[in-house]
Image 1 (tube, rainbow, N blue to C red):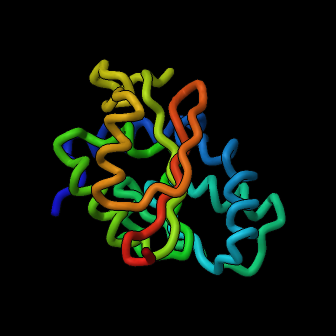
Image 2: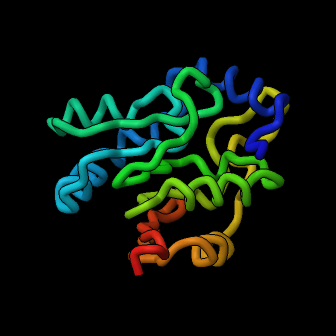
Length: 175
């Protein structure tokens, strides 16, 4: 199923030329590392990996001996989404075209066989697309997102922050 329109994919490719776009995972990487180590996970699937900043930062922080699987439609060379012990989706979902959101969330459900670590912004981004729209196409409150998450996952933890929230989910098949 389609996850992104051709027009929006072109806009995202252009935005990814900006070195300051797709850097949210750098700031959250220490939390991901701690969570990964505490869970004794072996692999990370990075959904919406962009330029793989999560991988590079985790490596700089000293995380070793783990499998890393990137997925991002802007970078088709990464291949399709893959399962991982820990599925990370950092600052991605608010960038999805709303007509494709259900497909993307179903994709995340399919690859989250254990735990998901997702961050979602609920307000506007500082960046603007070349067509004038805000880079955060979906600006919805936490409860709107929570309803969608609860249909697909068991919510283990939700933590609000000034820009949105962090949600840790578990596959319903583990219940």
